[in-house]
Amino acid sequence: MNDLSRQATRLEAIGGHFDKWLLGAIIALTGLGVVMVASSSIALMSSPFYYLNRHLIFLAVGIVLAGLAMRTELKTIEQYNQLLLLGCFALLIVVFIPGLGSSVNGARRWINLGVSKFQTVEAVKVLYIVWLSSYLVRFRDEVNATWPAMLKPLGVAGALVVLMLLQPDFGSSTLLLAITAGMLVLGGVNMPRMSMPIIFGMIGMTALAIFEPYRMRRITSFLDPWADQQGDGYQLSNALMAVGRGEWTGVGLGNSVQKLYYLPEAHTDFIFSVTAEELGFIGTCLIVALYALLVGRTMWLGMRCVEMKRHFSGYIAFGIGLWISMQSFVSIGVNLGILPTKGLTLPLISSGGSSVLMTCVAMGLLLRVSYELDRAERRHAVRMGGGDDASEDVVRAPAGGAPAAVPGRVANVASSQETRPDAPAQGTAPRGTSRLQTRIEPTFGRLS
Image 1 (cartoon, rainbow, N blue to C red):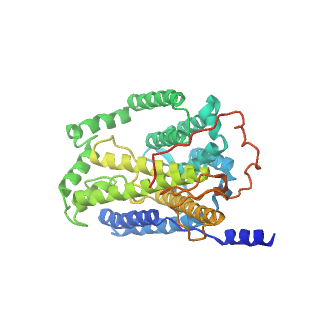
Image 2 (image 1 turned 90 degrees about the vertical axis):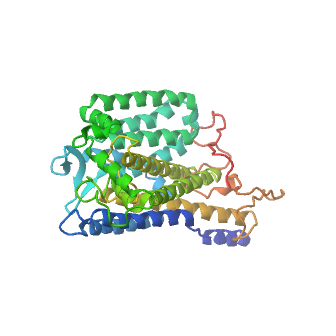
Image 3 (image 1 turned 60 degrees about the vertical axis):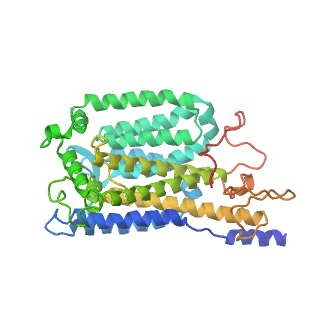
Protein backbone atom coordinates (compact mmCIF):
# COMPACT_ATOMS: atom_id res chain seq x y z
CA MET A 1 0.00 0.00 0.00
CA ASN A 2 2.86 2.34 0.81
CA ASP A 3 4.46 1.57 -2.56
CA LEU A 4 1.19 2.42 -4.33
CA SER A 5 0.92 5.67 -2.37
CA ARG A 6 4.49 6.64 -3.22
CA GLN A 7 3.89 5.84 -6.91
CA ALA A 8 0.68 7.90 -6.93
CA THR A 9 2.46 10.81 -5.27
CA ARG A 10 5.28 10.55 -7.78
CA LEU A 11 2.85 10.59 -10.72
CA GLU A 12 0.99 13.61 -9.33
CA ALA A 13 4.29 15.47 -8.96
CA ILE A 14 5.11 15.03 -12.64
CA GLY A 15 4.24 18.11 -14.67
CA GLY A 16 4.43 18.90 -18.35
CA HIS A 17 6.00 21.36 -20.74
CA PHE A 18 4.50 23.64 -23.34
CA ASP A 19 5.30 22.75 -26.94
CA LYS A 20 8.30 24.87 -27.93
CA TRP A 21 7.55 24.90 -31.67
CA LEU A 22 3.98 25.99 -31.06
CA LEU A 23 5.02 28.66 -28.58
CA GLY A 24 7.74 29.90 -30.92
CA ALA A 25 5.34 30.26 -33.86
CA ILE A 26 2.83 32.15 -31.68
CA ILE A 27 5.46 34.56 -30.37
CA ALA A 28 6.92 35.15 -33.84
CA LEU A 29 3.54 35.92 -35.44
CA THR A 30 2.48 38.12 -32.52
CA GLY A 31 5.74 40.09 -32.61
CA LEU A 32 5.46 40.53 -36.37
CA GLY A 33 1.88 41.71 -35.87
CA VAL A 34 2.96 44.43 -33.44
CA VAL A 35 5.56 45.70 -35.93
CA MET A 36 3.13 45.70 -38.87
CA VAL A 37 0.30 47.35 -36.92
CA ALA A 38 2.69 50.13 -35.98
CA SER A 39 3.86 50.53 -39.57
CA SER A 40 0.46 50.28 -41.29
CA SER A 41 -1.40 52.65 -38.95
CA ILE A 42 1.17 55.37 -38.36
CA ALA A 43 -0.49 57.80 -40.77
CA LEU A 44 -4.15 57.06 -39.96
CA MET A 45 -4.66 59.33 -36.94
CA SER A 46 -3.36 62.64 -35.63
CA SER A 47 -1.52 60.57 -33.04
CA PRO A 48 0.81 58.26 -35.01
CA PHE A 49 0.83 55.56 -32.33
CA TYR A 50 -2.91 55.54 -31.55
CA TYR A 51 -3.64 52.13 -33.10
CA LEU A 52 -0.34 50.69 -31.88
CA ASN A 53 -1.09 51.66 -28.28
CA ARG A 54 -4.61 50.29 -28.61
CA HIS A 55 -3.28 47.04 -30.08
CA LEU A 56 -0.75 46.66 -27.27
CA ILE A 57 -3.42 47.19 -24.62
CA PHE A 58 -5.66 44.51 -26.10
CA LEU A 59 -2.65 42.24 -26.55
CA ALA A 60 -1.70 42.65 -22.88
CA VAL A 61 -5.25 41.77 -21.78
CA GLY A 62 -5.24 38.87 -24.24
CA ILE A 63 -2.00 37.52 -22.77
CA VAL A 64 -3.57 37.60 -19.29
CA LEU A 65 -6.59 35.66 -20.62
CA ALA A 66 -4.27 33.22 -22.37
CA GLY A 67 -2.41 32.72 -19.10
CA LEU A 68 -5.67 31.85 -17.35
CA ALA A 69 -6.53 29.35 -20.11
CA MET A 70 -3.05 27.81 -19.85
CA ARG A 71 -3.52 27.25 -16.10
CA THR A 72 -7.01 25.73 -16.30
CA GLU A 73 -7.45 21.96 -16.50
CA LEU A 74 -9.27 21.01 -19.71
CA LYS A 75 -11.48 18.55 -17.81
CA THR A 76 -12.74 21.51 -15.78
CA ILE A 77 -13.62 23.41 -18.95
CA GLU A 78 -15.33 20.32 -20.37
CA GLN A 79 -17.75 20.20 -17.45
CA TYR A 80 -19.31 23.52 -18.54
CA ASN A 81 -19.91 22.53 -22.18
CA GLN A 82 -23.66 23.21 -22.10
CA LEU A 83 -23.15 26.65 -20.55
CA LEU A 84 -20.64 27.44 -23.29
CA LEU A 85 -23.24 26.62 -25.94
CA LEU A 86 -25.83 28.82 -24.23
CA GLY A 87 -23.17 31.53 -24.14
CA CYS A 88 -22.82 31.31 -27.92
CA PHE A 89 -26.51 32.02 -28.47
CA ALA A 90 -26.59 34.71 -25.80
CA LEU A 91 -23.64 36.56 -27.34
CA LEU A 92 -25.24 36.54 -30.80
CA ILE A 93 -28.62 37.69 -29.48
CA VAL A 94 -27.37 40.44 -27.19
CA VAL A 95 -26.19 42.56 -30.14
CA PHE A 96 -29.84 43.17 -31.05
CA ILE A 97 -30.73 44.62 -27.63
CA PRO A 98 -31.16 48.40 -27.93
CA GLY A 99 -28.64 50.34 -25.90
CA LEU A 100 -26.28 47.40 -25.59
CA GLY A 101 -25.81 46.34 -29.19
CA SER A 102 -23.85 48.70 -31.44
CA SER A 103 -24.18 49.19 -35.19
CA VAL A 104 -21.22 50.02 -37.45
CA ASN A 105 -21.68 50.55 -41.20
CA GLY A 106 -25.15 49.00 -41.03
CA ALA A 107 -24.01 45.80 -39.27
CA ARG A 108 -25.00 44.95 -35.69
CA ARG A 109 -22.05 42.81 -34.59
CA TRP A 110 -20.76 44.65 -31.54
CA ILE A 111 -21.72 45.29 -27.94
CA ASN A 112 -20.72 48.50 -26.23
CA LEU A 113 -18.62 47.84 -23.12
CA GLY A 114 -18.06 51.52 -22.39
CA VAL A 115 -14.29 51.58 -22.83
CA SER A 116 -14.47 49.69 -26.11
CA LYS A 117 -16.72 47.73 -28.45
CA PHE A 118 -16.58 43.94 -28.54
CA GLN A 119 -17.45 41.82 -31.58
CA THR A 120 -19.26 38.87 -30.03
CA VAL A 121 -18.75 36.44 -32.91
CA GLU A 122 -15.04 36.25 -32.05
CA ALA A 123 -15.90 34.76 -28.65
CA VAL A 124 -18.48 32.48 -30.25
CA LYS A 125 -15.77 30.84 -32.37
CA VAL A 126 -13.82 29.75 -29.30
CA LEU A 127 -16.83 28.71 -27.21
CA TYR A 128 -18.36 26.76 -30.09
CA ILE A 129 -15.15 24.83 -30.78
CA VAL A 130 -14.95 23.80 -27.11
CA TRP A 131 -18.62 22.75 -27.07
CA LEU A 132 -18.33 20.75 -30.31
CA SER A 133 -15.19 19.05 -28.98
CA SER A 134 -17.13 17.97 -25.90
CA TYR A 135 -20.03 16.76 -28.05
CA LEU A 136 -17.74 14.64 -30.22
CA VAL A 137 -16.29 13.03 -27.09
CA ARG A 138 -19.71 12.20 -25.64
CA PHE A 139 -21.22 10.93 -28.89
CA ARG A 140 -18.20 10.07 -31.00
CA ASP A 141 -19.40 6.52 -31.84
CA GLU A 142 -22.98 7.61 -32.49
CA VAL A 143 -21.82 10.45 -34.77
CA ASN A 144 -20.30 7.78 -37.00
CA ALA A 145 -23.32 5.44 -36.87
CA THR A 146 -26.55 7.43 -36.63
CA TRP A 147 -28.19 10.34 -38.43
CA PRO A 148 -29.51 12.22 -35.34
CA ALA A 149 -26.10 12.37 -33.65
CA MET A 150 -24.54 13.75 -36.84
CA LEU A 151 -27.33 16.24 -37.56
CA LYS A 152 -27.48 17.75 -34.05
CA PRO A 153 -24.21 19.76 -34.30
CA LEU A 154 -25.16 20.74 -37.85
CA GLY A 155 -28.49 22.01 -36.54
CA VAL A 156 -26.74 23.97 -33.78
CA ALA A 157 -24.33 25.46 -36.32
CA GLY A 158 -27.26 26.31 -38.59
CA ALA A 159 -29.05 28.16 -35.78
CA LEU A 160 -25.91 30.14 -34.97
CA VAL A 161 -25.44 30.95 -38.65
CA VAL A 162 -28.99 32.33 -38.87
CA LEU A 163 -28.21 34.74 -36.02
CA MET A 164 -24.95 35.74 -37.72
CA LEU A 165 -26.67 36.39 -41.04
CA LEU A 166 -29.16 38.67 -39.28
CA GLN A 167 -26.27 40.92 -38.16
CA PRO A 168 -25.21 40.36 -41.09
CA ASP A 169 -21.86 38.48 -41.02
CA PHE A 170 -21.52 36.22 -44.04
CA GLY A 171 -17.78 35.63 -43.62
CA SER A 172 -17.97 34.32 -40.06
CA SER A 173 -21.04 32.24 -40.97
CA THR A 174 -19.15 30.47 -43.71
CA LEU A 175 -16.15 29.99 -41.43
CA LEU A 176 -18.28 28.45 -38.65
CA LEU A 177 -19.89 25.99 -41.05
CA ALA A 178 -16.48 25.01 -42.44
CA ILE A 179 -15.10 24.44 -38.91
CA THR A 180 -18.14 22.28 -38.08
CA ALA A 181 -17.72 20.13 -41.18
CA GLY A 182 -13.98 19.76 -40.62
CA MET A 183 -14.34 18.77 -36.97
CA LEU A 184 -17.05 16.24 -37.78
CA VAL A 185 -14.84 14.66 -40.43
CA LEU A 186 -11.88 14.49 -38.03
CA GLY A 187 -14.27 13.19 -35.36
CA GLY A 188 -15.00 10.13 -37.49
CA VAL A 189 -18.34 10.98 -39.11
CA ASN A 190 -19.61 8.71 -41.87
CA MET A 191 -18.38 10.47 -45.00
CA PRO A 192 -21.11 9.34 -47.48
CA ARG A 193 -23.74 10.47 -44.97
CA MET A 194 -21.94 13.76 -44.39
CA SER A 195 -21.73 14.61 -48.10
CA MET A 196 -25.42 15.45 -48.39
CA PRO A 197 -25.49 18.22 -45.72
CA ILE A 198 -22.26 19.66 -47.16
CA ILE A 199 -23.79 19.88 -50.66
CA PHE A 200 -26.98 21.51 -49.37
CA GLY A 201 -24.96 23.91 -47.24
CA MET A 202 -22.79 24.98 -50.16
CA ILE A 203 -25.87 25.53 -52.35
CA GLY A 204 -27.56 27.59 -49.63
CA MET A 205 -24.54 29.81 -48.94
CA THR A 206 -23.99 30.32 -52.68
CA ALA A 207 -27.61 31.39 -53.09
CA LEU A 208 -27.26 33.87 -50.23
CA ALA A 209 -24.20 35.37 -51.91
CA ILE A 210 -25.83 35.60 -55.33
CA PHE A 211 -29.21 37.03 -54.31
CA GLU A 212 -27.78 39.71 -51.99
CA PRO A 213 -26.83 42.70 -54.19
CA TYR A 214 -23.82 43.95 -52.20
CA ARG A 215 -22.38 40.42 -51.94
CA MET A 216 -22.84 39.92 -55.67
CA ARG A 217 -21.03 43.20 -56.33
CA ARG A 218 -18.09 41.92 -54.30
CA ILE A 219 -17.94 38.80 -56.46
CA THR A 220 -18.08 40.73 -59.73
CA SER A 221 -15.49 43.25 -58.54
CA PHE A 222 -13.25 40.37 -57.45
CA LEU A 223 -13.36 38.92 -60.95
CA ASP A 224 -12.27 42.24 -62.49
CA PRO A 225 -11.37 44.91 -59.89
CA TRP A 226 -9.98 47.24 -62.58
CA ALA A 227 -13.39 47.57 -64.29
CA ASP A 228 -14.59 49.84 -61.47
CA GLN A 229 -11.37 50.87 -59.80
CA GLN A 230 -12.89 53.88 -58.04
CA GLY A 231 -16.02 52.00 -56.98
CA ASP A 232 -16.54 48.38 -55.96
CA GLY A 233 -13.03 47.41 -57.00
CA TYR A 234 -11.29 50.13 -55.00
CA GLN A 235 -10.11 48.02 -52.08
CA LEU A 236 -8.88 45.10 -54.13
CA SER A 237 -7.17 47.19 -56.80
CA ASN A 238 -5.21 49.15 -54.18
CA ALA A 239 -4.34 45.92 -52.35
CA LEU A 240 -2.99 44.42 -55.57
CA MET A 241 -0.96 47.55 -56.27
CA ALA A 242 0.57 47.29 -52.80
CA VAL A 243 1.47 43.64 -53.35
CA GLY A 244 2.94 44.42 -56.77
CA ARG A 245 5.12 47.23 -55.46
CA GLY A 246 6.74 44.89 -52.94
CA GLU A 247 8.40 42.71 -55.59
CA TRP A 248 11.03 40.37 -54.06
CA THR A 249 12.41 42.23 -51.05
CA GLY A 250 9.86 45.02 -50.50
CA VAL A 251 10.19 48.78 -50.37
CA GLY A 252 11.39 48.67 -46.76
CA LEU A 253 9.68 48.65 -43.39
CA GLY A 254 7.58 51.82 -42.96
CA ASN A 255 7.93 52.90 -46.61
CA SER A 256 4.56 51.73 -47.90
CA VAL A 257 2.72 54.25 -50.07
CA GLN A 258 -0.63 52.47 -50.30
CA LYS A 259 -1.20 52.73 -46.54
CA LEU A 260 -1.24 56.54 -46.84
CA TYR A 261 -5.02 56.89 -47.17
CA TYR A 262 -5.18 54.83 -50.38
CA LEU A 263 -5.73 51.32 -48.99
CA PRO A 264 -8.78 51.06 -46.65
CA GLU A 265 -8.43 49.03 -43.44
CA ALA A 266 -4.66 48.86 -43.89
CA HIS A 267 -4.09 47.88 -40.26
CA THR A 268 -6.86 45.24 -40.07
CA ASP A 269 -8.33 43.36 -43.05
CA PHE A 270 -5.65 44.43 -45.55
CA ILE A 271 -2.57 44.37 -43.35
CA PHE A 272 -1.12 41.53 -45.43
CA SER A 273 -0.99 43.82 -48.50
CA VAL A 274 1.01 46.41 -46.55
CA THR A 275 3.30 43.63 -45.34
CA ALA A 276 3.79 42.43 -48.91
CA GLU A 277 4.61 45.97 -50.03
CA GLU A 278 7.14 46.61 -47.28
CA LEU A 279 8.69 43.15 -46.86
CA GLY A 280 8.20 41.78 -50.36
CA PHE A 281 7.80 38.21 -51.54
CA ILE A 282 10.37 36.95 -49.06
CA GLY A 283 8.53 38.50 -46.11
CA THR A 284 5.17 37.09 -47.18
CA CYS A 285 6.71 33.63 -47.57
CA LEU A 286 8.01 33.92 -44.01
CA ILE A 287 4.50 34.73 -42.74
CA VAL A 288 2.98 31.81 -44.65
CA ALA A 289 5.71 29.50 -43.28
CA LEU A 290 4.95 30.60 -39.71
CA TYR A 291 1.25 29.91 -40.19
CA ALA A 292 2.11 26.52 -41.70
CA LEU A 293 4.24 25.75 -38.65
CA LEU A 294 1.52 26.89 -36.23
CA VAL A 295 -1.28 24.96 -37.92
CA GLY A 296 0.85 21.91 -38.68
CA ARG A 297 2.05 21.65 -35.11
CA THR A 298 -1.52 22.12 -33.85
CA MET A 299 -2.86 19.28 -36.00
CA TRP A 300 0.09 17.10 -34.98
CA LEU A 301 -0.71 17.70 -31.31
CA GLY A 302 -4.34 16.82 -32.04
CA MET A 303 -3.34 13.49 -33.53
CA ARG A 304 -1.04 12.71 -30.61
CA CYS A 305 -3.91 13.44 -28.21
CA VAL A 306 -6.21 11.09 -30.12
CA GLU A 307 -3.55 8.37 -29.97
CA MET A 308 -3.33 8.87 -26.21
CA LYS A 309 -7.14 8.59 -25.92
CA ARG A 310 -7.34 12.27 -24.93
CA HIS A 311 -10.09 13.02 -27.40
CA PHE A 312 -11.38 16.25 -25.90
CA SER A 313 -7.91 17.80 -26.07
CA GLY A 314 -7.40 16.46 -29.58
CA TYR A 315 -10.67 17.87 -30.91
CA ILE A 316 -9.93 21.28 -29.40
CA ALA A 317 -6.59 21.28 -31.22
CA PHE A 318 -8.28 20.20 -34.46
CA GLY A 319 -10.94 22.91 -34.15
CA ILE A 320 -8.52 25.73 -33.42
CA GLY A 321 -6.18 24.51 -36.16
CA LEU A 322 -9.05 24.54 -38.67
CA TRP A 323 -10.11 28.00 -37.53
CA ILE A 324 -6.67 29.58 -37.79
CA SER A 325 -5.83 27.87 -41.08
CA MET A 326 -9.09 28.79 -42.83
CA GLN A 327 -9.27 32.36 -41.54
CA SER A 328 -5.64 33.07 -42.43
CA PHE A 329 -6.14 31.46 -45.86
CA VAL A 330 -9.20 33.62 -46.55
CA SER A 331 -7.50 36.79 -45.30
CA ILE A 332 -4.38 36.22 -47.38
CA GLY A 333 -6.47 35.13 -50.36
CA VAL A 334 -8.53 38.32 -50.24
CA ASN A 335 -5.38 40.46 -50.12
CA LEU A 336 -3.90 38.62 -53.11
CA GLY A 337 -7.10 38.82 -55.15
CA ILE A 338 -7.76 35.08 -55.29
CA LEU A 339 -10.90 35.30 -53.13
CA PRO A 340 -13.77 37.83 -52.94
CA THR A 341 -13.42 40.57 -50.34
CA LYS A 342 -14.46 39.47 -46.84
CA GLY A 343 -14.04 41.22 -43.52
CA LEU A 344 -11.80 38.68 -41.78
CA THR A 345 -8.67 39.70 -39.90
CA LEU A 346 -5.31 37.95 -40.14
CA PRO A 347 -4.95 36.01 -36.84
CA LEU A 348 -2.24 37.26 -34.45
CA ILE A 349 -1.15 39.98 -36.91
CA SER A 350 -4.09 42.27 -37.67
CA SER A 351 -5.25 44.97 -35.30
CA GLY A 352 -8.71 44.53 -33.78
CA GLY A 353 -9.53 44.27 -30.11
CA SER A 354 -12.06 41.42 -30.18
CA SER A 355 -10.01 39.33 -32.56
CA VAL A 356 -6.80 39.85 -30.60
CA LEU A 357 -8.42 38.92 -27.28
CA MET A 358 -10.09 35.72 -28.45
CA THR A 359 -7.18 34.58 -30.58
CA CYS A 360 -4.99 34.86 -27.48
CA VAL A 361 -7.50 32.73 -25.55
CA ALA A 362 -7.41 30.13 -28.34
CA MET A 363 -3.60 30.08 -28.23
CA GLY A 364 -3.77 29.64 -24.46
CA LEU A 365 -6.03 26.61 -24.92
CA LEU A 366 -3.62 25.17 -27.49
CA LEU A 367 -0.68 25.56 -25.13
CA ARG A 368 -2.73 23.91 -22.38
CA VAL A 369 -3.40 20.99 -24.73
CA SER A 370 0.33 20.63 -25.36
CA TYR A 371 1.08 20.84 -21.63
CA GLU A 372 -1.41 18.16 -20.65
CA LEU A 373 -0.29 15.90 -23.51
CA ASP A 374 3.34 16.16 -22.43
CA ARG A 375 2.33 15.53 -18.81
CA ALA A 376 0.31 12.46 -19.79
CA GLU A 377 3.23 11.07 -21.83
CA ARG A 378 5.63 11.54 -18.93
CA ARG A 379 3.27 9.87 -16.47
CA HIS A 380 2.67 7.04 -18.92
CA ALA A 381 6.41 6.52 -19.18
CA VAL A 382 6.63 6.20 -15.41
CA ARG A 383 3.74 3.71 -15.32
CA MET A 384 5.48 1.60 -17.94
CA GLY A 385 8.67 1.64 -15.87
CA GLY A 386 10.66 3.94 -18.13
CA GLY A 387 11.32 6.70 -15.58
CA ASP A 388 10.51 10.38 -15.72
CA ASP A 389 13.00 11.06 -18.49
CA ALA A 390 12.12 8.07 -20.65
CA SER A 391 12.35 8.59 -24.37
CA GLU A 392 9.08 9.34 -26.12
CA ASP A 393 10.23 7.37 -29.15
CA VAL A 394 9.97 4.02 -27.35
CA VAL A 395 6.62 2.38 -26.76
CA ARG A 396 6.65 -0.12 -23.93
CA ALA A 397 4.22 -3.00 -23.69
CA PRO A 398 2.22 -3.62 -20.51
CA ALA A 399 3.87 -5.43 -17.63
CA GLY A 400 5.00 -8.88 -18.64
CA GLY A 401 5.31 -8.05 -22.32
CA ALA A 402 8.33 -7.15 -24.38
CA PRO A 403 8.98 -3.51 -25.25
CA ALA A 404 8.32 -2.54 -28.83
CA ALA A 405 10.30 0.25 -30.48
CA VAL A 406 8.02 2.36 -32.66
CA PRO A 407 9.53 5.74 -33.60
CA GLY A 408 7.30 8.74 -32.91
CA ARG A 409 4.46 6.69 -31.42
CA VAL A 410 2.95 6.61 -27.98
CA ALA A 411 1.28 3.48 -26.65
CA ASN A 412 -2.42 3.56 -27.48
CA VAL A 413 -3.63 1.87 -24.31
CA ALA A 414 -6.25 2.75 -21.75
CA SER A 415 -3.66 3.43 -19.07
CA SER A 416 -2.37 6.41 -21.08
CA GLN A 417 -5.51 8.43 -20.26
CA GLU A 418 -5.35 10.26 -16.96
CA THR A 419 -8.10 9.59 -14.45
CA ARG A 420 -11.15 11.77 -15.05
CA PRO A 421 -14.13 12.17 -12.74
CA ASP A 422 -16.62 11.56 -15.57
CA ALA A 423 -14.86 8.52 -17.05
CA PRO A 424 -16.86 5.26 -17.05
CA ALA A 425 -15.89 2.55 -14.59
CA GLN A 426 -13.62 -0.23 -15.78
CA GLY A 427 -15.52 -2.94 -17.63
CA THR A 428 -18.43 -0.70 -18.63
CA ALA A 429 -19.08 0.82 -22.04
CA PRO A 430 -19.16 4.59 -22.54
CA ARG A 431 -22.53 6.28 -22.86
CA GLY A 432 -24.44 5.15 -25.94
CA THR A 433 -21.64 3.06 -27.43
CA SER A 434 -22.39 -0.49 -26.25
CA ARG A 435 -24.40 -1.38 -29.37
CA LEU A 436 -22.07 0.23 -31.86
CA GLN A 437 -19.09 -1.10 -33.72
CA THR A 438 -15.58 -0.13 -32.73
CA ARG A 439 -14.74 3.12 -34.49
CA ILE A 440 -11.61 3.77 -36.50
CA GLU A 441 -9.75 6.85 -35.34
CA PRO A 442 -8.80 9.55 -37.88
CA THR A 443 -5.20 9.52 -39.02
CA PHE A 444 -2.99 11.59 -41.32
CA GLY A 445 -0.58 8.75 -41.87
CA ARG A 446 2.50 7.76 -39.92
CA LEU A 447 3.67 10.50 -37.56
CA SER A 448 7.33 11.15 -37.01
